[in-house]
Length: 410
Image 1 (cartoon, rainbow, N blue to C red):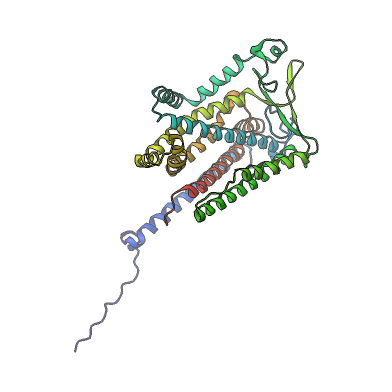
Image 2 (cartoon, one colour):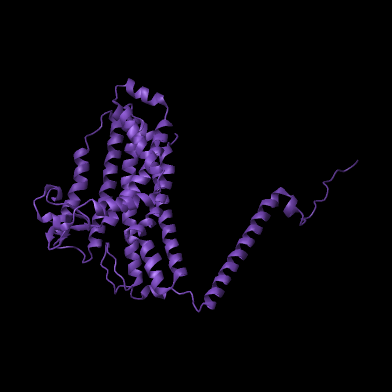
């Protein structure tokens, strides 16, 4: 009788790292990692050697030094004796302000233009096509400079508001559009919770966020009730009360009052002064990005089968109701991913603010601070880190929203 035995297993050989598919991908990754680490270490050592040759070191102590320059548009208290760190914070807040306002307005304009491009009205669809193609094919910098020139050249000076000329009168006696910017009413507090006005508004925003969450829970309860009984409870008065009442209570507790702008000498005083540079940058970013969003919205709508619209019309729904309740909710899964990229582009394009003198993070931390301290490496690293973190936050928030609206299978 012959006994069959398994052949002795062969040991591991170095050639398997290249020729064996089980190890080849791991080998390539290890080699690539080693090369990248060597390249990074060479870059760091070369940078340190060049800094030593120039008599410099790598230090962030300059952030605690007095800045020595003024910032015309700011959300928090600041003067020329404040530190470079505070100047950077002022610039960062200015960037966040114009990015938030731009994303909101660009989304509104993009959705409206994208829907109207599909209108059966020939004139409306052609006008939207002119807007989209006009703004998409002209550099953003030109639009920023053009709108800023219109703001400064075609609007009256504050002194013109002294006369009775209707062309230079305030809108509703509360808003003044001048060549120095736009003056609008401001809400002040007689008994604020905090001395820093920004903290008071943060409290209001937190309460508003909680109220919006409560409204979503109420609407969810109404939806569950409708599925169980076939009748949806009336919730509009609850939604309004949940949002309005807490904010109204906060305003009463802090003694909120309206401060209207008024002509004082050669300029306006009171209210809020929105400089022409902010308005020009905001409108240019919104109009430019809105043109791209319009095409994204149009593509998302066209991706939905026509049978959806026909079924809605067969049920007696009007075209506007069909668009709001049937088409757009389904198109969101196509619209949201490229919309995230447009929000990121708008945020990074706000660095062009230096062209019109708007003091954002690029102008403060990445501009004047670097010129005064000579810390170009540290300043650019901090500026790049800020844009990186901001982009990741925007992308993360939008991805969470995208996961909440995408189709969920049973």
